[in-house]
Image (tube, rainbow, N blue to C red; front, side, top):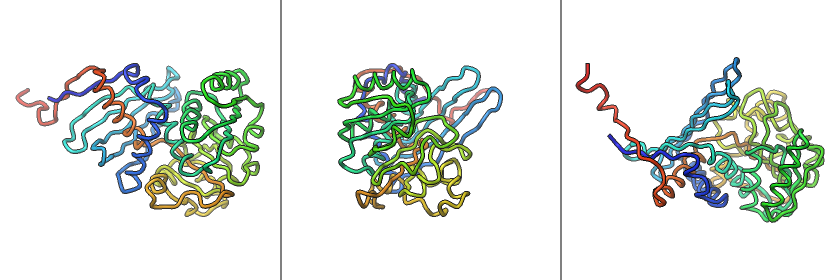
Length: 333
């Protein structure tokens, strides 16, 4: 038997700032860029009730941990349930089991911010956000940890939602945050564009992007759904979290290739390769860059490992016992 720490969402809430999540996730992607193993999600879709059951994994050898994410979204309750197992990469023993509810927007937001930090202009200060849910909040708070954000324009289809988001973020951030009535109005003049939606079709016109804009798209990971149009993909230096997604669930890229807007080799690099210095990031101020973030075990393991260490230091969590397979059915009929 081995003792494993079970951490509730409440246990880990508040254990780290957005900037600390960004630091942990950046380090995870550096390791990926230097060869750390990671696999894209395996997604199982249910038609009735509609739902998604998915998982993905990664090993971070320098941190000595491995693990991933298993979660369901939709189904009868119309909600999501996140479970993050964390293992010791040397012994293989389970270290922790983390309820990922409160962690999820922060670790996902941190991934987007690592993309912004690696690819956006250093002086980027105007941000457009398309979407107004928890993921949009996590993305914006993390972006504010890597750039001096001065203005934010947010659009989502429901007026009350975008205005509520703008009011909350205006109070939370040292920036002017305002709701606008269209995605066009949000995107025009933006230095950084973040899409955090569940849309099936492109959420803005790529012709509206100014030279030098960076785009982080994180709301879709389905081969037949996309947040970005072909124009955006074709105009960009396109960076993805894992190349394995290019033919699996990177819907914007898949559509652009199928339509002939770009060639199959249009992808510039993985984010980890840029972070590790194995591939160049932005090369000039007029370059349009895209980071396609579909969710990986890299940020999940990096964030879970950080929270595990902090929870241990704070005496949080409950110890649960796991039996090794060598003990399974031993001496039993």
